[in-house]
Amino acid sequence: MTVQQQFSITRTEISGHNVFDLAKKFGTPTYVYDAETIRQRIEQLKQFDVIRFAQKANSNIAVLNLMRENGVVVDAVSSGEVHRAKAAGYALNATPHQIVYTADIFDREALDLVVHDNIPVNCGSPDMIVQLGKLAPGREITLRINPGFGHGHSNKTNTGGQSSKHGIWHDQLDQCVDLAKEHGLIVAGLHMHIGSGTDFEHLSQVCDAMKQTALAVGDSIHTISAGGGLPTPYKDSDQPLDIDRYFQLWDATRKELESEFGHDVSLEIEPGRFLVAECGYLISEIRAIKTMGENLFYLVDAGFNNLARPILYGSYHPMSVAFANESTEETQDVIVGGPLCESGDIFTQEEGGFVCSRELPKASVGDLLVIECAGAYGYVMSSNYNSKPMAAEVLIDGGEAHLIRKRQTPDDIIAGESIPS
Ligand code: LLP
Image (spheres, helix red, strand yellow):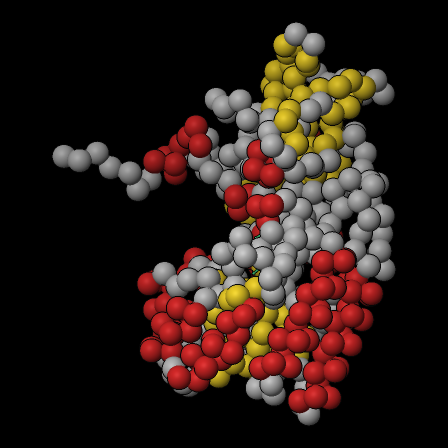
């Protein structure tokens, strides 16, 4: 089932809660997530045997807990993400594996942790195979293969091809299977993730590449992972991915492998954005409105320290205004910027840093500006640049707005720093 989004440039509520009430209660800037939207996205992927949430997209433990309660397992790309998963109630030594460590390297801490906690590993480099094999022979592993092509919404999110550092180069497959054997490891699964925010055409090519790769490895393969990368709509004109068609493609590949190998092959999917992008809103307050020659700026109290996607990739996010007083239907072209002392702190920009304007309602200082579809790669990529506190996070579930992360205080920001005596 695919639902075409309709974005509006004005808004009074988020999931039944008045935007001003939320701002009054939790302050601004604040991230708000709607639990029901996450559940709907999970439901759309239920045909896959395993939904493995790429928690890097949104790793608040309340979000992870919601995933877990709805049958979704997680990947982890660091010891910090393993720690979060455990804090959210994910178990070690369960089937299917509730936490899988997927990376291109082990830092020393992560290697110790996966060995100690017996966390399954998806190896993205020959060195990972060697390092794990030396400490934990006898284990089953999966290999992340770079099929030689990739695609993403930006060059920076393309994770395939020879300019990418990700995965094991497809030509080195045999070598890596031998390396695994030499170190007492069994290659039981394969994984491919060619980029984030990709499209149907490229995602289907992965399916073919997976089939060839799995056939080349043979019947030790029990799991195949389609990776993530599923696109989500950020504009009315963005076509949502046809999930049923996508599943059918992978299911057919899985069935071919099953008949070839004579045993079941589990089909995993590993989305981040698809599960959480649309549930998220970043509420900010318009604090200044000023003109620069012919340009009009709305300056809000959220910056790229809160949401880095526009400055990093020129990403487009829908925006809406909640009026403090009289609403108006009048619109104007504006540039939306944040409070940071850096020219790039602009939410309306295109890839390459080209500032552009957006048609938004005629607003006043004190109105709220809501940046939408901000649930994926929003809070998780935030920083304390300009010593700005990290925003609060709120989860709306069952009609209640729950604070799931407190806004940082100035003391939180300097905690851990010290002046040499
Ligand atoms: N699996 C692996 C191995 C990944 O590296 C990623 C994302 C995913 C799954 C999930 O991809 P998704 O389904 O979310 O597209 N910061 C960028 C996105 C970086 C994605 C990194 N890896 C952005 O804001 O668009």
